Image (cartoon, rainbow, N blue to C red; front, side):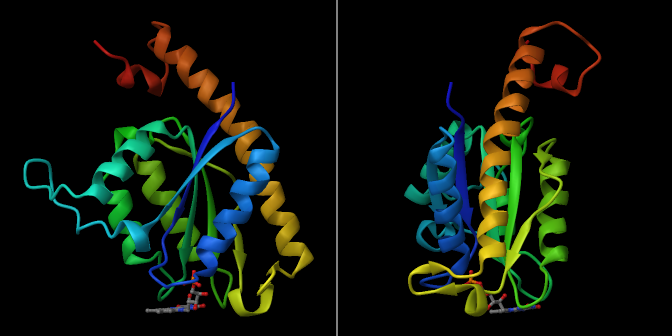
Length: 197
Ligand SMILES: Cc1cc2nc3c(=O)[nH]c(=O)nc-3n(C[C@H](O)[C@H](O)[C@H](O)COP(=O)(O)O)c2cc1C
């Protein structure tokens, strides 16, 4: 069975490098048999998160809800804003909790530095939701590593290809074990809390 991989671009900038890197990762993931979809938070324009009952329902919210439930693994890309993930990415993550559990996440960061704090913040938010993370991320400098045709730095391209492959391979393994644990009655697994009563 193919892995359903959702890319999320957290930049509000037109022509964002975050979105271009997501496109590259999703193209490569399809070569490994993944089914892919993409969300650009710039286009989705999600309202600021409000708790259930006070939520503002827009077409963007409905599409995000549908795709987050559909996805079995994610690649999140954020620009580095003051050493943090973008507000748009944090707002997107605030909408979800149990929907992210047991799914694998990979992280990208468009930064003039290394983007490590940005990717650590996304990893922390995902961990709080019981999602799994690849043990590395990929950062790039938009101006230096991209040109009009695409990615021009071979080392960045290699790392993005590696991340695509690892997301598909490890994402499938984790998805399959999560499903087995959901269907079993083993009490000694974090998955027990996600079983339907
Ligand atoms: C509000 C704001 C804060 C930023 N802070 C940083 C920063 O702390 N470190 C950095 O390397 N770049 C910083 N940048 C630059 C962006 O991270 C950089 O331009 C990035 O490539 C944009 O990604 P995008 O093309 O996906 O929008 C900042 C940009 C903005 C708008």
